[in-house]
Every structure is written in structure tokens, then in C-alpha cells.
Length: 168
Image 1 (cartoon, helix red, strand yellow):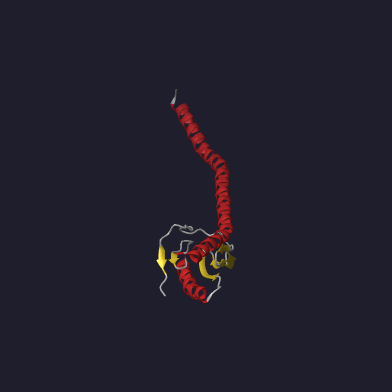
Image 2 (tube, rainbow, N blue to C red):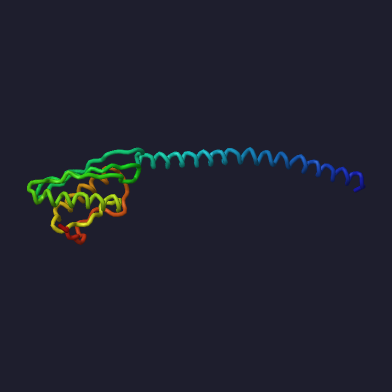
């Protein structure tokens, strides 16, 4: 081939490559954009779904939850907890009083069990010697309140804990 033909062919190839690259890049960008947009939309939907599930699992704000009545020999025990987010911020118990002795015991046991609850943030409370039935009923009602509130705690009520002596 003569030189002008060779130069023409080279120029034609160069022009084709130069013109073809932007077209190929534009085509790649056009085909990649929808998949990227779909991936972003899918990720945003998954994030929104996770946030909705988290909001549903732990209701915002302060709420009061009453545990189930736990009957024992001396009467019913009911624990009420105040929950903020996923944390127990206050608790009270309706403990039975049928004698002066039970009133004295419950005046000591109630605040002690409440203190344990607020410290441990769980249904795990120590059984108290001299108030074993009250301690067990408190723990059962407390665990029911925790379950009803839908909060996750470190440990659940277990009736096989060692007893703590009640000091008079």
C-alpha cells in the first residue's frame, strides 16, 4: 500500500476509536446508573425498614407498665415499672400487708428489691431470707412487666438464686 492510503486508514481507525470511546463510556454510564440507583433505593428501603422495626421494638417516651398479679400465701404482689426507651427508670410494688410483722418485712424488702432492679436493669433479683415468697412473687411480676414492656434485659427471673438474709 502506498503511504497516503496507509495514513488514511490510520486516520480512520484513530477517528473511530476516538469517537467510539465516548459512546462506549456514555453507554456504560447509562447502563450502570439504573443499577446504582436501584442499589441505593434498595439500601434506603432496608435502612427505613430497620429503623421502623427498631422504633416498633422500643417505643419512645416514658411509659408505665404494670406486671401481672403474682399470688402467694400472704396475698397478691404486683410490680409496676416506669420505662424510658429501653431503660427501667422507676419501679414500685404493691405488697400484701396482713400483720404488723409483714408490714415491717415489706417495708424493708420493697426498697431493697427496687434498688436491685434499678441497678441490674433485669428481672434478676436476689431472694431474701425471711421474705422468700415475697421475693419470688416480686420477681415473677417484675419479669411479666419487663416482658410486657418489650425491653431486653441481661437476665430473666430464675427461682434458683441463693437467698440474702433479711437484716432486722
